[in-house]
Image (cartoon, rainbow over all chains, first blue to last red; front, side, top):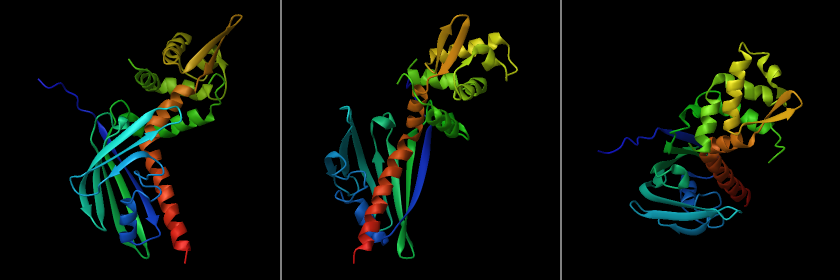
Length: 149
Length: 107
């Protein structure tokens, strides 16, 4: 029997207006020399990026304390200049194959970039995303000056 | 039980969150903590024990008084976890946007 390992998930959505055309923004997102992309070579180690449907990306990030965080994914949709979608696995997804979708909509001379990150694990933490929790945690964590840290 | 689970268990109770809110203003005696709540000293002590076990508060005995002090580090860990992905993408998009702003400025 398969054990019940269903994990609650959540989705986050962030929007930005980028001062460039959708095609430029789209190309920038899939360019590992472009600052701010997840696979930007200047910000990560060992970058592998093959942005084609069914192909993969890999990069690792290392913290100052020596911890290393590898990230893997598979491109599932590439529709220039409208949309790109890929799976995303890292130590933080707890073995779940999360899904990132980025859309690029023309907005005058600019581009409205919408990033959704879905299927993120929310098992022990689901209730933290409900109203008030974040604020409470922030208020307490930020208001506190550690004496024994 | 891992530490995140015990921290989340500890802060899942509204009275314990209220106690943490009170302690965020500074250390207090058990009686002072109990004062604003409609709870017996015994009930407050039980809540404090859960918070203590989760590493969220520290007890210091001075003579006959027990002073309870907030330890914020474990909460910071939870907060960072909750915000992790949002922070990750927000920081990346900041740099991505800044790059295109710079590019547009150039003739």
